[in-house]
Every structure is written in structure tokens, then in C-alpha cells.
Amino acid sequence: MRRIAAVVGMGVLLVVSVACASSTAAPQAPAAQPAKAVAEPAKPAAQPAQPAVQPAKPAAEAPKPATQPVLELKMGCSQPKGDVLCAAQDKFAELVNQKSKGEVFVRQLYQGLGVEHQLTQAVMSGSVDIGMISNGNSGRFTNAFFNYDLPFLFKTYDNMLRSLDISIGQKAIEQYEKDLGVKLLFAISYGSGRDVQTRNKPLKVPADIKGLKIRVVSTPVDLAIFKAWGANPTPVDWAQTYTALQQGVVEGEQIPMVSIIAPKHYEVVKHSIRLDYQALFQTFYINAKRFESLSPAHQKVLLEAAEEAKAWNRKDATERTQGLVKQLTDLGMTVYQPTPEEYAQWAAVRDKVWQEVAEQQKGKVDLAIAKQLYESQ
Image (tube, rainbow, N blue to C red):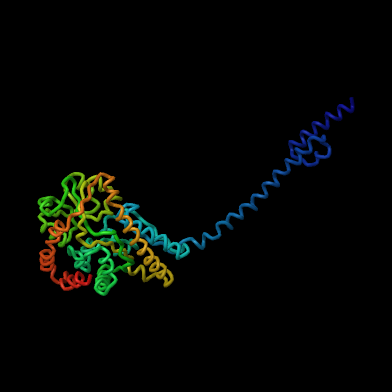
């Protein structure tokens, strides 16, 4: 009985000891129970190991301070993501990040800073660092590219792009930079110039466009071109163009084929005629004071990224344009290529428009320069 009482006493003691997690109970416990006691103390042993793992996190994140941007540039694109223009800017931002090893971060904002002239005003004021505007829309701020707006000036789109690298183009760029207070990074390619799209009526010759209200850029050149064709040119900001077409406020527009896809204009225009009648490119620029404030190393990064992004964009825009006829056809549009005789009717307004615009814009449009550009091709 004493032995039984002793065992019971020891059992009670063991339970109490285990409940209190006392290590002194281990020698008195039965052989099967020491494992529990040994396992229990192992828990604290596992917990101290946690700090050893946690310090490793900073080690994994150690590169972050080096890759955290020391400079952030705000950039705006007036088109939706995926558009040929935004894609060129995205490539530029990617290259800047790579070349600066993460020190410079370019934040892209899609359609969040207004239409092109509003974005340009923001860059000129310094509230935004990088922006873009078409050569036509830039006429609100400078006459640098008025000569480029003249219809049927270039025989091919590539000729137009190349002209920006020669002395005539460089003088225009210098004037543009001075008038806007920006530094041109590069001219973004659309892959082709302006064509004409209509909601319901297909076009083959100028007689087909007579009386139609066509959305145009608000420039003397655009107004003169469509009046010469017998149309009713109607200036509409790009942001309102889709709705204006949808509601029948205008019956057509004049954009390059590549610009139809991203904003889904194929939903509101059903016909396009390939005219490539007017040079069209997007000036991609940075506020000049902002650029000058950068370190020489960061300036070099931006310029190198711009040069590589330009080459990438030229290839991308060309490839997009090559497949557009089929793509637009699949989306329910008709794309018409005029015959040489039909095209000659459209181009017949060239001299008339050139003379009219030169008279209206004395000192802003130089026909001698225009003729030099045309004849140099």
C-alpha cells in the first residue's frame, strides 16, 4: 500500500511538474514520457531560431536601397495603354530604369493629364516632367512645324522621319525647343501619315467627301485641306472625338491607321482610305529646366534611352502598320487603297493649299523650305 501510495504521489507530482514545464521531473518520469519533456523544451529552441531567419530578410532586401529611385520623373501619355505612342514611352521608361540601375524611375500616366495641349502646358509649367504632342497640335504653342503640316509634302513616311535629322529638321526642332522650353528626346513614329476615316460613306475620290463634317486638328493647314476637298472641317479635341463620331456630330476623322485600334475607333468609323496625305509624328520631350537640373550621368542615361527607344519605336510602328489592313478588316472596317488616278485627284489640291496657307501664315510657313524638303527626296 505504501508503494502504491508512493507511485500515485509520484504521478501527481509528475503531472504537476509537466504542467509547470519543470525539467526536474524528467529523471523521475516513466521511460515513455521523457520524450514529451524533451519535446516541450524543444519549442523554445525553435523560437530563438526565428531571429536568425529574420535578420536574413534585410540581407535579401539589401539591394533595395541601391535600386530605390533617387530620382522620379512624371511622364504623361494622352493615349490608352498599348497604343503605339504609349508603347514607345513605356520602352523609354524601361530603358531608363535599366541603364540607371534603378536610380531613375519614370512614372507613366495614361490619359490622366488631359489631352495633348493640356499635357504640354503641364510640362511647360514644370508640374509634369515628360510629355508628348503631335506636330500638328503643337501649332498652339509654336510655328516650328508648320511647314511639316503642308499636305503631300513627303513622298514616303520614312522620308519625313529622315528629314528631322538633316539641317532643315534640326532648325525646326531648335525653334520648337526654344518656344516650349523643352528638350526633344525623340520623334515618335506612327508608322504612316494621316488617312481619312468615315462613319458610313466609303471614299474613293474627293467628290465623295463633299459636304461631310470631318473632325480635324485646329490648324490653318487642316482647315484649308478639307475645304479644298469640299468637306466641312470641324475641329474637335481628341478626347471628344470618339463621342462626336458615335453621336454623328462629325461624320469622319483624319488619323493614321495605327491610331484606330487602341481607342477602338473601329466601333464608330467603318471605312478608311489610304492617303498618307500629311506628315504626322509625336514630339516626345522633357522640361528643359528639369533636364538641366539632372546630373551629367542621369542626363546621359535619358539621352541613351531615348536613342534606343526611338529605334525600337520605328520598328514597332512599322510592324504594327503592316498588319493593320487585315486587322481592321477583321474588326469590320473596309480599307481602300486608291488607284494612282484617284490619288492624283486628292493630291491636286497641294499647290492651292500651300499658297493659301503661306498667305494666311506669313512668316510662319516658308514655301522655299517646303519645296526644298519636297525636292530633296
